[in-house]
Image (cartoon, rainbow, N blue to C red; front, side):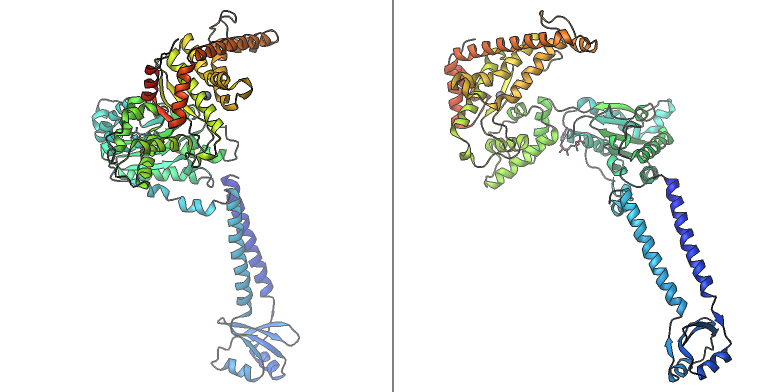
Amino acid sequence: MNKKKKILLMVVLVVVVASIMFVYNIYNNQHEYITYNEFISQLGKQKIDKVYLSEGDKIKVLDKDGTLFITDNPRKQDFKEMLLLKGVAVQEKGYEFQIQSILGTVFFIGTIVFLMYYLSKRSGGMASNNILKMSSAEKTVQDNVQIKFEDVAGNYEAKQSIRELIDFIKNPDKYSVYGARLPRGIILYGPPGNGKTLLAKALAGEAGVPFYAVSGSDFVQVYVGVGAARIRNLFKKARQAGKCVIFIDEIDALGKKRGSGTDGAGDEKDQTLNALLTEMSGFNENEGIVVVAATNRLDTLDEALLRPGRFDRHVEIRLPDVNERLEVLKLHSANKPLSDKVDLKEIAKQTVYFSGAQLENMLNEAAIVAAERESHEIDMVDLDKAFYKVVAGDEKKDRSTIDMQDRKITAYHEAGHALVTKIIAPDNTVSKITIIPSTKGAGGFSMNIPPDRMYSTKSEMENNIKISIAGRAAEEIVFGEQNITSGAYNDIEKATDILMNMVKRFGMYRDTGLLNYDIMYKNSLHVNIDGDIVKYCKERMQSFYTQVKALLNKNIHVLDKIAEKLLAKETINEKELNEILSQTKKSA
Ligand code: ADP
Ligand code: ZN
């Protein structure tokens, strides 16, 4: 329902109430008037049943036949006593007053109930909440931001890009003299927990200006027009404050591509987005206000937001690489009693794909675990526990429930991955192998970090396929074909994915040609090629599998050693793996 309809509804409501009152009043004043003398004579004839006393100049009288009269109010001190003595009932508040107050109350309550019902229906029960949140813009301002760039690890390019803005906020006039058009808005995009909020805060902290934080989701799910009003209110407040940083988290919530809303909140979102765009083009470049917005994905945003004069600077905030992870770890462990034995570099290597927030969380968990066992410092064991907590939920407490055979199969499966990696792709790092299951159900865990590179070569991809299927191969060699497990589910998925890409997109095999099969499909040629591709891929995969099995068979003594160590220690790291490999001769 839009604004117009709502106003119309209110008008109708008021008109209905007013006309009922009006009709009632007419009805009310229809009572027959009798003079005071007549009243006294009726009173003498004992024909009066009840008198309604009131402050006004008329009073109402009910006779024994049940008819209502009005007559003049004598306003005598002992009038009431006189009536009572004559056996007439007296009611202090006037008749109409009584009825009117009842009617009024009923209408009042009715209107409120109706409005609340209507509003709560419109916004899914959030009505009262949202009314309260209307002033949230004022509560989110932070005046003295202590966060500085040194509190943000990594993100070098983003920092560089944001650093330029500090001077712009501090000395906007310097730039306007040169006619330089500086960005009013900057969008930070990337996966959650990597410092987008932190960077925006650091910008305010470094520039020494207030920090206004709101979230895009605060602006949806409210009544029509409120989101837009909140935006205007926010900018008004910010402008009054002078220079500042406005941070809009989850901007996608209000800035999704227009017309894509199917949730019925489309109207409202558009209004809010329009208000934001208007406000952003409204402030002058030399005001020293910068709007920083954050989102996980840039591609879902309305193009209008990304145009020059709005959010024209886009900075990607990626997951930290190994050096950045080390920085984050150093930063967040500075205030924690880490044991000398803890090697943060090692941990940084083992935490591929961890976000900054996850790393911080891991250190915090480690501190908790250390405190639980009343150790005065955080040791490697604490960090190990914390590692699994963060990657896969809590480490299973009761390990005895896991069948010994299961543990053995897992150990050989993981050992297979690790060994094949070490033999065919020694550049990759096997950071950690474990047979400790997590509550999320993952049987084991092993990671390899391919060296950072722009492209993957054919042999790298084939190696990755072989590494993926090495777990299953080890299971089969050691336990027999009948005892292979479903534990290879993810491995097979990954291997198939790589192979399909090599065949269908990268044109890497002579037999399937230098062709893009997606385009072939579009041209409806699949009748002939579907079967061919499946047949070819099956053969390829089978040949990889045979090669991997041969490799493992040749090095079965090494595989045994790794599996044994895993069964004994449950978790081994790269150093320990390398020790095993150097002690036993492996052959390619
Ligand atoms: P985002 O806004 O990208 O979702 P935040 O900036 O809110 O992520 O980060 C959440 C928390 O994770 C931070 O408060 C901080 O403790 C930690 N963190 C994330 N990235 C970094 C980083 N680059 N340097 C230091 N700490 C980080
Ligand atoms: Zn596996």
